[in-house]
Image 1: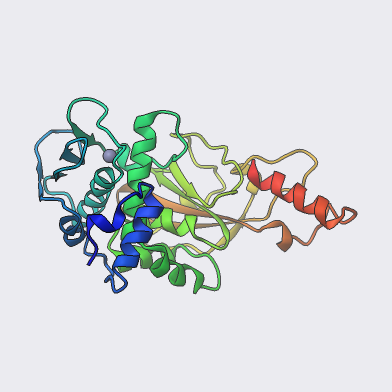
Image 2: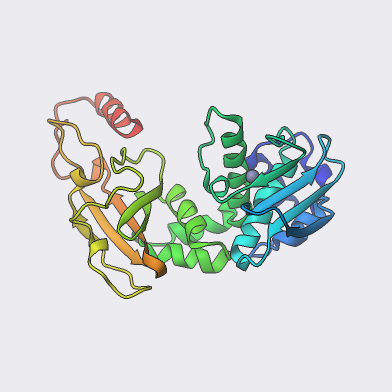
Length: 298
Ligand SMILES: [Zn+2]
């Protein structure tokens, strides 16, 4: 069974989770997050009384003690994620509360994904989220689920959500991040774009937060809650930045209709090697490679 000594000297989300998995080769799924937190020296998990926050952590600089606080009456999936997030703050010992003596994390913090953020607060939250996601959906358990499919389908997000007992949105992050195909998952409410998760290298999405999703989107065809559309061709130029003179990538859209006006949209781009039309046929393979890198790294 893992204990905090096993993690000594490791402070990155991936490093910590790798060591935890190594010490717990028979870790069950869904991951028993509360048990793990106690094993790793969290003394108690209590109800958070401060309004406006999802979770908190009471600790000291040297981490001689740690108590996790979770908002009252949240659904069990959010509770699991919050515990993972706060455990992340506890184990990444250079994390320090922004003000006062305890960590307090709101809903926005729980969605922060930018590990390269300049602001310390933002970066810390992103690291705590990365830790929670990796621990709740360990890549060795997750990859066979994602890679075992013949093509990208939002159905897999639902499978991850059920299998690992995480929210659909947490599942969407992992699904996009580890997908062998070039996908993005957009979170939409009442036909308006909120945020997205995508595989590294996905082209720049031009829609801004709060904007109406393009008219051509399947999301505007009201469908039954819980239903999943086909994956249909869509015009990539409506969604992503395209360059004059370069062919527009071939893109497919699929929509999962959820309750309360929410929807998830999967955008899938066929990668260059899948294209029929090859504008670079006179280039050497090295030149092609460089051009492709430039295209996907923007
Ligand atoms: Zn936090």
